Amino acid sequence: MGTEEGATDITARQRARMVDEQLRARGIRDDRVLEAMTAIPREWFIGERYRRRAYADEAVPIDAGQTISQPWIVARMTELLAPRPGDRMLELGTGSGYQAAILAALGADVLSLERHAELAQQARERIASLDLPGSVEIRVADGSLGDPAGAPYDGIIVTAAAPAIPVELRDQLADGGRLVIPVGPRNRQILTLAVRHGNDWVETAHGACVFVPLIGPGGFPDERFDPFL
Image 1 (cartoon, rainbow, N blue to C red):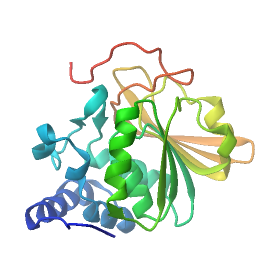
Image 2 (image 1 turned 180 degrees about the horizontal axis):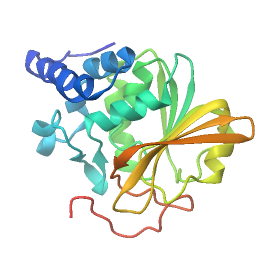
Image 3 (image 1 turned 180 degrees about the vertical axis):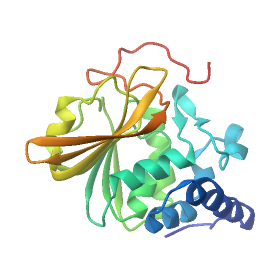
């Protein structure tokens, strides 16, 4: 994995410190996830205005009123999803493209759906500059009900909050597939893992979180929402 220009020594040190202090020290154990987050330049996925906060222990604003999630949340969701090389992954909410890049760095082939055309294009350009073992396809679409035409998927990751797990997403998982999604009201959710076993799903809760809302039939109505208010 690499970039055309390579990371500077300063940002490489910042990434290493982020991985040690924010991820490993707080319970992220999957070495592959830690390696991917050490390799991918997070600052590339943040606009110039907020780039100095790229390695802060917080969510950071991006365009279209969206955010790039806190590094620990990205690592935890990736760890729960447990992507393997060659897995087909569906991501709902491309945002900056950072989460999709991490999954592709782990060898997954990712279809990512994004409502905002400008975010989708920015993410495509950023990911195109990376040398990744997996692939990322980004489509502009309402992804709140997933992508039934492409199902089944080995994993589904939802990077926005839903009031409940849409039935449609459960049905798009392969047997043994894993779905990671923040579930709850707009101002506070529970990070939830659902694993499919035939026609049954085993759900486990993995702590409180706050995400921007998933907009559309599978999520919330399209109302103004600012997570920083």
